Amino acid sequence: MKLVAASAMALAAFVAAGCASASQMPRRTLPDPIVAVELPEEPARPEGGVQTRPVAQCVDADGQETPGGVLFADETAAYTGHLRVSYDELRGLYSIDQRTWAREREVYRRYLDLADDEVDRANGRAERNWWERHGAAAGLTIGVVVGAAITIGIAAALDGTTDAI
Image (cartoon, rainbow, N blue to C red; front, side, top):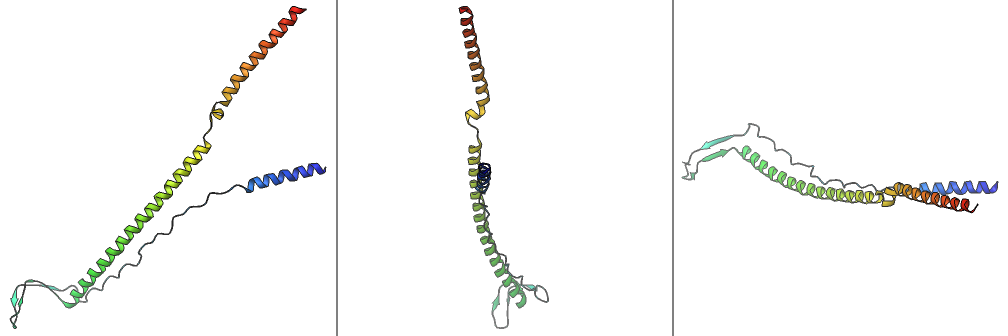
């Protein structure tokens, strides 16, 4: 009885050790992307709207010559200057995002390549060898040949014994 209990305990320990040794693959995740999320504030529009006037070349009372063009109101000039600065800042943030996403794409491709290598390794381990693929046919062939040889041997032995009688 003690032998049966000891055998059962040993079998249970063996099964538990076998189940406990199954290791899981490490979980691979991409790092969090670095993205410029703070966009520049949109500048406040001038209260009276954008105010411009076309100006022809003229000479003022002091005798200074003003070339023709577009004359901006002070608020409009400040607004357009602020737009230009904001645009440059936005372009800088966009280029940072492009470089960041290029890096993220490269990391992602590297993980895909590692996953492909792992799949190839798993397929290599799962691939059946020649004996596993052809073992049944080879066993049948060997069984038929051995069976025929034994049958012929038995027939020859019986034939030899019947002649002796």
